[in-house]
Image (cartoon, rainbow, N blue to C red):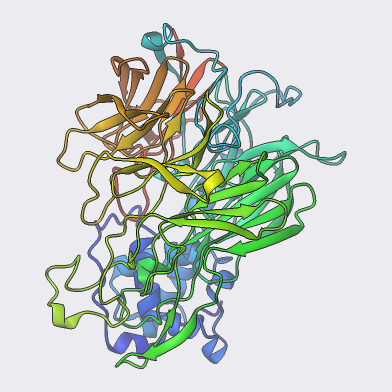
Length: 605
């Protein structure tokens, strides 16, 4: 194994962020990428002395990486790293937690399904993919559950993700099965009624996306699609878990797929994001070259039909720092969320993240429309300009570091990081108008007109983004009359806001004891909302009246015999199908939130 830790990079130690040092579950994202960009990237991203690139290294297990830099041939170059830095570096490079391979496979668990009934998705009540439908409404129209049933919800079963790792992905429910991904890289197929395990599949890295299930061909009757945090896209046999095809979406070393692929009419639309901003504040990193995008695939064969970037021009070198690092641009505008498909207008809409370099590209903090068939850009609507942001910039978000030590890789005018984590929601009103509804991290709710190149129809400020975080993060929802926005509390008693689709006027607010940014889910008469403290709530869509709540931040007995507890409910939201509510609890990424490792299934008692 040829992992090289550049000696030159270790001479001048960058001041890495100070994460919570959980030695049992070291985070492999922010802290790990900061360590890699400061100590390894100058060799591995340039193939210096034959060093393998990050994508090749990703095929190594975290255990192999840790052994190489601790006691192996690269140990002499890693002497300046602490034990914790070595562990987060190994987890980042390996793309999954330590110990994942040994305990994650379904064959190592209890409660394997004794029988495998014929799999027949597309019938009855299901939740397929991220936003329930192609418009990402998160409005379950046939839940098999009523508002009157909601106060009677009780826990039916709990599934524990092995090795105490994070409840990473949002579940998909189709054909009587639950499909869910984990940060270990394992994807599981469970029985929706009992939680028994049909199969598991191990991807190359953690799987944060929801899965989309659709028809296949004679050899593979149904396929399930997802992406991983190293930029790979997969199709597996939904009945057996066998891999059918796989593609690396982008060659950038820090590319990832965090938004769920969208499956519509035999085509798969896959968004592209990255974590380049998480290491770019390191003075030893040549910032920045990544640009977001979306690609279209033939869902059956895996042939890529087109790929379009959010920033049309490839990053070019602009200047050199005092340390000799080249700085590039433009860069950024990743697509963190699932694309939205508009079959009537033959368009696919994506929402973008912040820029990494200044001046910030027009495509950052924007909604972009692409032609569904060709990938050509139709229009761009930017809602916040000049948001050029990277993490860990001394003198800005790290007040203990003097401003005059600021890294030259950071933007001079560091942006607020108030981009889009939401998917665009497409809704047609009773009067025939169509709106794109979306929430932004700065606390704005927006309604845009797709027939007028994204012109603003209405907007409302529902909360305030705050230093190091956002106000409306991962997922809003909309039924036929209201749009629902989860608002992070941040010292404000905000919680959940319902706006009238026609005007943007506030219909009601619900204020639980603690706010949260988890995606909300709507069924007729009820909206479900998860909090950062682990509680899941149900409110009446009529007036915001509380109907039910459950504290998930505790230990659970699981159907697969794995020790499990709940925690933060964040990027993965609750889903409803077949008369049951499914809640992943314990999402943890970028070192934030209370870690948990459980998927909970509720039904009326």
